[in-house]
Length: 383
Image 1 (tube, rainbow, N blue to C red):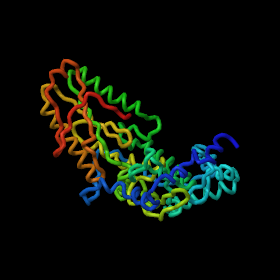
Image 2 (tube, rainbow, N blue to C red):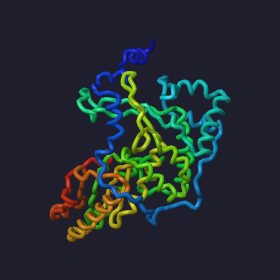
Image 3 (tube, rainbow, N blue to C red):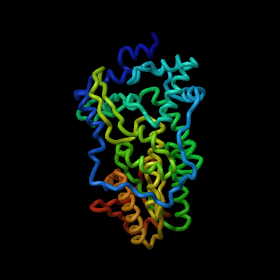
């Protein structure tokens, strides 16, 4: 037995063995994960968002196309942890697929399953049911908020999702559908590009003897709060066929396992499917109209991290303050329409200017309702 196998046999590397330290029942934890977004829910608007005219769309309608066994093999080679032996919720392991997929009959069968799903616009409940393993955030688990979910999805579902992602991403990329200053979950983009964009903006402001104000907006549990009805409503904006994606997003289920004890299977009320490249792309489409709701500054975004940039003359602070407050209010109204939320108490602001301008600058505070946002001397940007 190798070293790693020995550690696993002792339970040292086994997440599920750690769960014996948790006093809460699997059902209690599952209900907590299912309802985690409800603590941020408030009196959202009931009407669906309206399409903004400035959004880039496509004249070509996107529908999922059949794939081939060769494409299935290619997709599998890109998957991580292909030798993992732990079974998924359907009893299949990555190792099992790695061993049998080279058989042409197996590859053909999996291809047929995927193509039938695409043709019928249907994702079976079995492939929308995930196992969740709660992992302690610290040594002492005293409350339900002290554990985080690790989601185990069916292996076949992952292959199918990757096949759908490849086609959808090609459509989105070819037609330039995403906000150009969205740097998250996109091939060839990273936090470095976001840093460069913000830095260039600041240098330009400084060179023009202006001040730059950066507002780092804290979105509350953005992925957990995603509403499938709103996503599905927005897909036609980009000429994307929503039938298969509707089946993919709706009526998803999960159960929690602790030391081989399973909770009841419960329906997920809202939230983006965990650990899927497809769900990440869907999330980008969901928030893609956010930057178009403001009219003064610009938004630099990395996934759900939204950063509002505004600039103005040092001697016109009241006008600049008014512009920033208007943009922030427009963003809050967008979150209300899209059933999301902002944590204003965690939202930070920093002011960038030449030292001599900064020294003589009058106080700049942003007021939003009863919350006042004051400037900080330093902050972590996309850290």
